Image 1 (tube, one colour):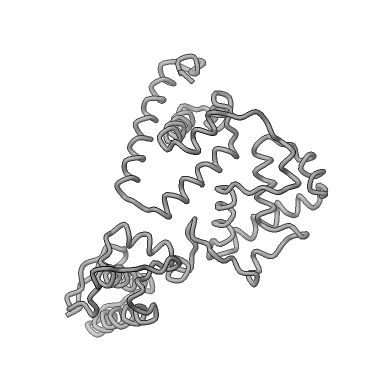
Image 2: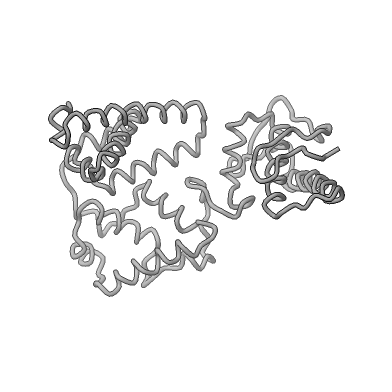
Length: 305
């Protein structure tokens, strides 16, 4: 009954050939932290996923199939998706939001925008010289905005030796943390963007209308993201080109990019994602044509700011 219901080695699912074990009510309320429907217990959901997945695995192995651990994970993933649809009348986008919300539980890895409780017991997040990951991110943000190391050292009361340790230990932890909690949280701090009272008085400048606009206008952000990529493909330093022509530093641009990524993850809508992706590709082609026409000249001469 279960044989060949799933394609092993990928996450493409096929509907299990058995009657649904649960019927969703017409009106559904969802837990805001897990996106599980409140009309059932999360433990019952996980148990039913395990029951169906293990039955399929047992049937396959009884027929002589050799399943790898990756195969088994895919089987669980596919049954989890199917059951979530059935129990919550969920569409594909809602299933994706559910998976990202619970990515740490079900895959062991974090997703940007969904770290709700970092926990004080995580050794990878222990402060270094009394400075947390958020503190470190705030300093790096200032650095990418053009503030000198010495200004940051003075404001924070640290020296070069401590800074060197911070720049060694935090990236090392990012590489060692298999849950990607440190890396993902670091990205979320860029999306805020993180700041500290000690740093607020340094590096301030005049308001930049281009920076303000990419924070609120998704189309303008996608246009500049396309322009930056076109510059890279043309052989230019895309980040530097954006800095010179729009006054937006690498740190500020990356911060805004993380803001849009986090928002996109939390409000996942495949139609919107495809729309903005296509718009960026269109703008990238337009800027590439400008760069090519200039043959290495000052492309900014042809751009209306």
